[in-house]
Length: 242
Ligand code: PEP
Image (cartoon, rainbow, N blue to C red; front, side):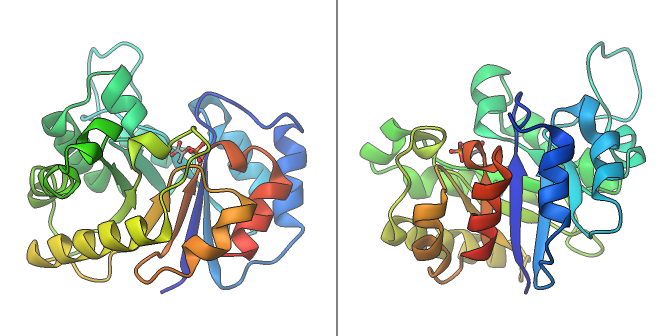
């Protein structure tokens, strides 16, 4: 399985500029890597153009749970697909915490994304309190078991990102042992739900200085990178050490 590295720009764009960022990425070759960039919606088409035939793909950061309707402000999976994007983040912890996305909304979005022709990158992970109360396994189990059965493994590609909430944007990454334990559990749970060979990414304060040791963990198929993806140079360093 190719290593997969995805950039999540959140509601930011790279200080060096979008064109310069894309140029830095497309002037190199990453033959044995699958790379995605998830910018804010208005930049998707421009980035698809800037990335050209490099093979680097784009992704939405979220999507609606339906294709059409009176849903002011929403963007459907089909609309994201029409920009040339190939994937979409679903259930990012910032969506869960700030926009009320619970497991049932996440399940609907997962179905919509898959039926709209996008690869869902399903984000799951426990909060600091849940970890300290030893609820990590129960949270991961609930977040997977309440949504995965809504999609069919035949004909759907799925990517899962383990993103402990306490590690996102804090500078404090999970340790390799914590990542190994969570990824093994996720792979086991996915297997029991009929999904094998699902790439499992780690996300949470990944940077050039920790990417190598985290990438060496068994079951880590790649990374979802927020802050450190805004600089093309640090993103490239992460890709190279993955
Ligand atoms: C993220 O937004 O998914 C993320 C992992 O952010 P950061 O790398 O900044 O922790």
